Amino acid sequence: MTTSFEALLPGTERALLHRVAVAQSEGRSPSFVGAVVRDGALVWSGARSCVDGHAPDADTQFRIGSLTKVFTAVLVMRLRDEGLLGLDDPLERHLKGTGTGEVTIAQLLGHSGGLAAEAPGAWWERSPASLRPELSDVLGEQPFLQTPGRRHHYSNPGYTLLGSLVEAVRGVSWEEALRREILAPLGMGRTTVDPVAPHAGGWAVHPWADVMLPEPSESLGLMAPAGQLWSTAADLARFAAFLAAGDERVLAVASVEEMRAPASPAGEGDWDGSYGLGLQLLRKDGRTLIGHTGSLPGFVAALWVSVEDGLAAIALANATSGPLASVVAADLVRIVAEAEPRFPEPWRPIPEAEVDEELLALTGTWYWGTYGYGLRLGSERGVVLEPLTGVGRRARFRALPDGGWVGLNGYYEGETLRVVRRTDGSVSHLDLGSFVFTREPYAPADAVPGGVDEAGWRGL
Image (cartoon, rainbow, N blue to C red):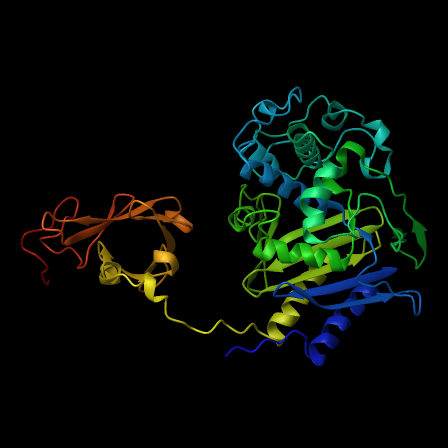
């Protein structure tokens, strides 16, 4: 019997509201909204405002800036899954005339394409889109700052290209593809390209005085796929649930997991973070968070998901600077994870149909040289190989239709594990990408490359 707690405890809710209140006060934000998702459901939201009795709620729109990039990345991954493009394809194969040469779609998704961070000319977030009517206006005469593929360098023009790629392959506008393929299936009716009431106004707060100035709200035009969207805490909760567990109506679970894996080399000083295929990755408070941050004049936003904890959090504020939305969203996850840790699923034996005596006989201790490893069965005839002591190359393997297994993570990702048998049918050893694993360390009769000293083990 399992116990499910949908509502948060009163003490947890108070701690969450206190964190939002501190963020609004210390960050000097006109308003601040926080929300928490647990196991796919919105379980808490709270807000603070400088206007008494008029705090926004989970249905109030805020501009989410670069969180938009995750939506664009999902659209690109859908095209890949449909076989309409490959992530290693040069962009020019599908979007002609950009002048970006051999930069690949994967490099653009992971911000390792070497493109400039911003568009040339006037500050694009505060200037009319009419100043950038063509991709050449977004890229400029020298779009590359670095050699593609060498390192991570965040690029708004890169996601402009990806938005145009979606339009070229789909034959519809980026906005229409977004609405039809992501927003409608996930029920995100309050996520829009332009603001729809009720929505927050964007403000600049003076750094040295408690006074405010309204920020302009420009349409980004071609650069919309990099940061245009308005959304709500409730809608982003639905999107967070999708990023945690996938939704076959939008994107296969395996493809969402692919987006969450590091995809580009870290920049100098970025050892606590990385970037996947459209998703930021962060190590904080001992947990891995995936999601994205966003900012545009007048707004900051953050969405973080801890898949392991089954938790996600959203933070939205309407100030250009001051509120630390990313830190607050991570703190909201931590507060719930520490106050109400997730109950593990009850242990259950595997289904009777999956019991295989030959597989069962392979479990237990194996040796790579003198390194001891344990092999245990996973689900659906998969296996896990892990060191018996210390740190080592732990990996999960998925069963292949024609026998053997393929590595799913770590050093052995993509490598093949297979059973090698003797002429009499008995098991000789395991072969893992040419590494030999035997039942005993360097037994004379084992097929150890280089052979085993005939005198055997000895003392000093």
